Length: 525
Length: 110
Ligand SMILES: Cc1cc2nc3c(=O)[nH]c(=O)nc-3n(C[C@H](O)[C@H](O)[C@H](O)COP(=O)(O)OP(=O)(O)OC[C@H]3O[C@@H](n4cnc5c(N)ncnc54)[C@H](O)[C@@H]3O)c2cc1C
Ligand code: SF4
Ligand code: SF4
Image (cartoon, rainbow over all chains, first blue to last red; front, side):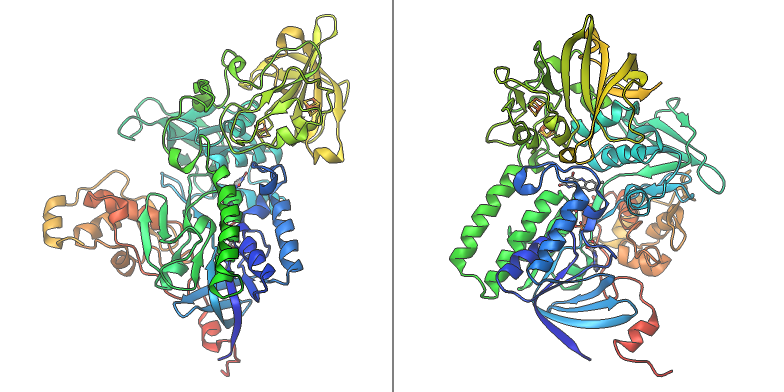
């Protein structure tokens, strides 16, 4: 039996694994990464939306691009990345058995990092095994990798970021999302993600779950019902929808089996079955580390930082970096991680109802219960101002770790400040030139440009538009409100596409002045 | 772990539920009712359940139903899912053909 040796073996080429490999290879470690997929990047290669965060976390870059950039960097530092390679065994001696194609191969590392990510959870209901019931991850794989529409009419279960993002992507792919349901009483994901789904006209059913899927050999419909305090369906609240697809986005569970196999000490927690590890990912078995979703579900941005921390820790463990160098690097990375773990969605706030923003402004309850900020709530946020000339209206109302809008404005009209979770505020004294960079850069598609009186009684709203076909100038259609309902008819007066906008087209519509604070989406008549 | 006899007394007899014919493990076609009945026969851990009913032993290796089975066990035993003893993990982590295992990187002479 031949055993190949490496300084560091990484299982999983997602953001955590690749970042760790890059960090270690920079210090001179001979590093190999295995991934069972045919494409590197883990969850990232399916993500076509722009990411949150700040510049260091690659904010406003689309997910799959971040994956490509990481892979390119890994190659540059001499990391070997082996795809179609499933790790089927990990042993405490840091030996790894890998199935590559049709062959088993054996490797031994002086250190092993497990960055295997997570798998999707399932729920059971009558008819859940019918073809047409799919996971959100599968829907993404079909659409974004294989360019196949998962169905025509879809019901989404799950209002976390995955459910919200995938609902939007389903509509981008041309599916109709008939409703979004969640058993929880409040939207779980970012308000800006919810708002962009709601304004397309998708109704939100919170405190609702699936009663049954209908159909004999495939899904032809779905029944949802309201859940009571005892988590049972309240009789009489059932609603039927004609759908051919039911998409489930009900959470992720860490895939930590390899670590258990390697006799690492594990803990069963609310967030899943995870390895017990230190901040830098060291487990109870010397030389075996864990980073990313496998040690607790978070985000790609935090997975990348955790990966770098583990990479540095392993470099130090194997003598490629002094203790002092490692500590300095850790401090830097910890500070970055800390900025991400602030705000309303910080790990410490999970499951809690946050009623006030850090600025002391009441959080929109309508956003949490229906997916959009109500017209009478929007005025209280610092991104919403009234000015005569063209100016941005920023409908970003929760403290999330994100700030590309601030960097985007060449005129300094948008301020978030040092703390990236602060709400973006519009600086009234700075003059907006209407360039649209803020609209295109906003990962949450939450920025609009508003201009009163372009002609008597009429003004213009510019909005981000990521659907095809792109409307033509002169086209007449309907303006939709934040709730997705028709508010007035309108005319498309400008369509801007620029390489700097990175495929977010800007659509300008002309509406009556009194609709400038209501019209937020466009639908062809 | 708990005393099996004591626990069986505490949870009382198996009572049929309306959704007992719901498939939980679709790879091996194990229903909720089968799992509940096994519990009342003293099968309290995921490991035993896998051996007894083959739930979680199919193609996806329990990736889909693992958490669901755990939830059913916890509910029936009146404990938190966190306290249900997990299955052991062993190689191969993913279904692997015997031929590939037997060759082990070399060439198999049939
Ligand atoms: C729809 C959706 C939207 C998201 N949006 C955002 C966002 O806007 N911003 C953000 O920061 N995060 C976002 N995330 C979260 C982010 O994608 C994940 O948190 C992140 O990818 C976790 O990184 P990871 O490296 O730990 O794991 P993964 O990305 O899951 O990578 C793990 C890799 O390990 C491989 N693997 C697993 N087991 C084995 C094995 N036995 N052998 C070989 N290879 C194996 C897998 O094939 C996979 O490629 C989103 C996630 C989803 C699903
Ligand atoms: S349109 Fe241009 S100038 Fe105006 S706020 Fe946005 S980025 Fe700044
Ligand atoms: S407004 Fe700014 S902080 Fe809010 S989602 Fe958009 S880019 Fe991020």
